[in-house]
Structures are given as structure tokens and as C-alpha cells.
Image 1 (cartoon, rainbow, N blue to C red):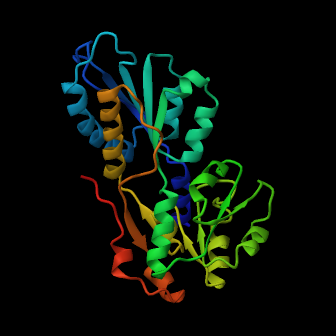
Image 2: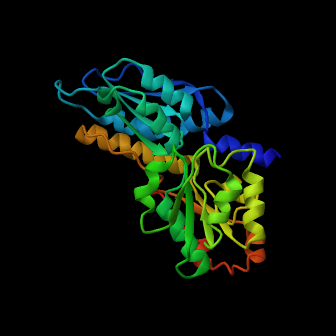
Amino acid sequence: MRRLRALAASLVLVTGAAFAAPTSTPPSGYRFQIVTGDDSHLTVRIAEDLYKRLMPTFAAFRTELAQQRRMVYIAIGPDGLRQAAARRCDCVVIAAFTSSQVWRAVVAALPPARAKTMTAVYAEPAPADQVRLATLLYRRPVRVAAVLGPDSAFLLPDLAGQAEVLQAGREDDMGDILARVKRSEVLLALPDSAIYNPENIRNILLSTYRRKQAVIGFSADMVKVGALASTYSEIEDINAQVAEMAAAFVATGELPAPQFPHYFRTVINEGVARSLDVAVSEEARRFARARP
């Protein structure tokens, strides 16, 4: 049950408190502030590592006096994102450790002009990387299915040509949905609370397991409780990408578009693989993209 609770928390990682660059930063340059929602050990670890990665960019850069948006907020977790989004300022926001579903919901509630000043590194793996992992696990192209709810329907273009996509409403029965994808060898799970939640995750994993259908999860915790495998990113992987986005903005004045994690590694449930008769190759185990 502890693992299931941890998995539920991973759907929308919440962190918070405030870490700011020194006030001595010259007014002719950019400043930054890390905005969070609590001061837990995990949050402090994220913020301290991120602060070290951001300091070289903001300490060395100088800009023209005409440059706008001199403040860059780095929002950690959904609460940090909501706090940063609510601030009235000449600023941009880079969000991290928040799922794409939550980020889009927050940004959709903002005026269009404000929404254009927001970007993110999403918390969950890139669908394309997950599909690639499934191919490596089976050592051949496989039939992949994905279920999208109302809040994850925006992922449809990302899955085009890579998976059979079923769209489900909030009131749809998950058993009926799973019956519709039973001909697929792999179910690609995506973090949508209307589809996957603490009440049904175990039943979904048991149902697919009995049908010899693999589940590619959206977190390492999901693999621990019965999914076959997933790519996942460490804190340092996400922070490195956030620092790259901030540096790109400082250098060009253009805010990069929201992104899935670039840097990741793979976790595999070897027991589930044996039960599904999946002979895991070393190529699948080593599937990763290391940060510089």
C-alpha cells in the first residue's frame, strides 16, 4: 500500500518555499527566483541543486536596458506553479516536477498574454521514448495501445502512428476500456487521473497481467507495483534541462516550448518480464539519454 500511495503522489508531485538569487545581482541583468510550496527535504534537495545550476547563467549574463522580463521564476511542483502564475510581474515562468496535465490546466486558466510567458519541463516520460522502450523490450515493433482521458487528449498528436489510441470519458468503466485494448501487446500508461488513480491502478495491473499484456508505466513507482518497465528521470536530470531552458531564454530572449524530459534512464521489473515471457535485452536495460 505504501508503494501505491507513492505512485499516486507521483501523478502530481507537490513541492514548495522560496529560494532567490542574491539581491546584489546587477539591475541590468536577469534575476531568478525558485518558487515552491513547502520546505520538505525533497523540495530543499531539488532547490539547492537547481540553484547551483542556475547561478552561472544569471551571475555572468548582462543584457540591454531595453530587454523585458528581467525576472525568471522557476516553479517547483504544482503549488509552486500556481503561486508563480498568480504573480503580476514582468517575468517568465519555467515549471518543473509537474505533469503535463496539471501544467496545461493551470496555463489554460490564464489570460493568453500571460500564458505565453510560461513553459515547463514535464514530470512524466516522453511518449515517444516509452514506445521506443517497448520496441526494445520485445526486440521488434509491437502493438501499443494508449487510453486518453479529457485532460490528456492533447497527447493525441504525440501518439499518432505510434499507438492505437482510445479516448475515454470520466464516467467510462475501466474494465470495458481494457477489454477494447486486449489485442494490443502493450498498454502505454499516461498520467491522467481520470484514467489511472489510486483506486484502480492495482486492478488495471492485475487485469493486464492475467492477459499477458505488458504495461509501460509512467514512473519508477508504477514499475515497482507491477508495470513491466518505464523510463524515468532523476532530480538532477530534470534540473539540468531546466537550467538549459533558462540559459536559452537568457541568451535569446525567446522562451522554449514546454518539453518532456530529455535525460532519462530505464527501470524494468524483471519478475514481471519473466512472467510475460519477455527476454529482456541489455540494449533495453541500457536504454537511456545521459545529461552532459
